[in-house]
Image (cartoon, rainbow, N blue to C red):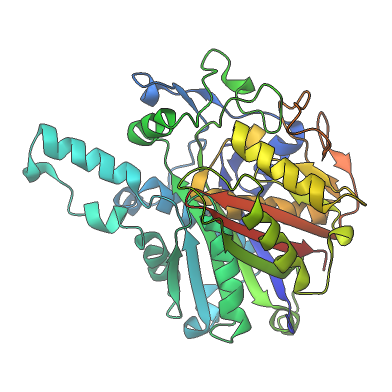
Length: 404
């Protein structure tokens, strides 16, 4: 990229806490957020990672799905970090790009139950505005007065990273000067939990939720369903400099590929992830030998972790990077994961610290050979890091992030 993309603001709402500070502390403390979930007590899996209850907000928030409420909260923090005030910007030069896997699925489930049990007379008039997949971006544009591009991306669990990559493209072609890029999902619902369980994707350690999400571990048996939101404020580097803002990090490359292999299983050789990695690095002439750290997708499923580990082993034979997965603490936040983990990667660079992978004790034959950070945080100077995001449908998105 001729004018690199600066990350100037971050906002997080996760099961680890509301805000970047609480989330970062939970990650560094390796404190898993998984708990028994009363809302899932009648289903095949009874645990999840929920966002902690926030302080009471404006009364109008009842109109929005939880995924949109998470987005509003995280966006406010991100704009504060970036020292941006909507009243002072040119709204036509600001874009919003939001990734989601399922839109307002909780609203849809709730209203559908009402329709079946009580009839159409009790349906909320806000049903469609709350659950349609495009509406999180639309609501945020209204909230912030943004009149530039307003887009929604949906690439399953890569959605948040795809939103960031899309925002980079908008900035690169001059379609905006500032982009609010986000991923948000609130898929901890009876339907989603039951459907993922039917696929065999969820951990069945209901008796010990805190130890259920085990990325790359020999005893992993599936992910823990979670919810949350991550927001990044992105600008061209020169635009941030003109505002007198020092970037938190720079996105120097990004790439998205498709496996074209299977609806839910990753390519057995990780071809799509491998291609996305090399393309993301090539943007600035970097190579695998330049990579210090990888924030892995690391879902804790047998297939994902094995394929991802094989790609990492093969690409980084000369200089293995440190590897971590946030999902041991946060669970799998679905379409929010890519944005949340991009923000965590920025924090890793800024703090010179790699959070540990919670619940990792030992690899099996498929995950051996990685330099997985475990136990306690590792002090490490990280100049170049990658964050991996993979999703159902064979979606792969890789972001290459450097220190400013």
